[in-house]
Length: 349
Image 1 (cartoon, rainbow, N blue to C red):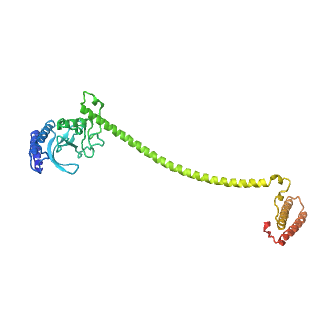
Image 2: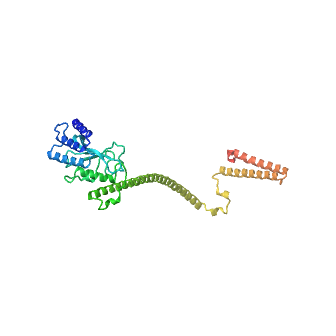
């Protein structure tokens, strides 16, 4: 492998006519039989096809030069493959696109592997319709539908120029609708253009869908919070309702008791009798207690009225003293009677 690399450097660094040098390198690489340096192409007819395609490529696009190097597949296997490396100039107003086109070990029956170099001044912008921004792998309608003998390297690069002119890997540019005019586009180019348009439509749709999902998620959180508050309010209201029902039951029972008492004690029976007659003493002791309490409270009320009469000057002071002396004497004998009966005077407080 080092021999072929040094041969490539010698051929391409000392000769301004790169086409003969490239052809010499292609012939040398395909004719190499060393197990360590030979490419992974064994069939002679396959080698002839590879030589013809590579020669046609470097003739049509002189900026590309053939190389051979180890290529690591996704499953970890490593093989020696020819590749064409160079810069693809899409237009004079945009930077060249550094490309490496690897020829698969089953080429031309398997499409080549096209990579845009990620080690450049200009990074590949995200969501490019044809180039993966992280690996630089190119995927186009031409590569996906690769079929020999209708496909070859020169036509592939020509197709890459077309699709990169629509969407440059380093610049996010919207395609022009004029591309669909039948006089300007072939069927394959029209499919590329349609794929590009669908890609951007899907990207925009996914972006809007993501925004809607975020809004719905936010709305869902709000509804969950409101549901919690509503549930708490319902529980509080239900507890209050239960308490009120119990209170109503208690009040209903009390009202029933009062209604029954009123039925037994008809208010008409009180109209012809004194209010005091509604309270009956159960024995002589209770009757004496009620009589003494009645007399004592009446004496207290009378003394209070006499005090007010003296204060207002409507009663002479001498008459006041005489009446108070008489009332105090009656009150004393009434209370002495209660003490004699063994009744505490606390009933008078």
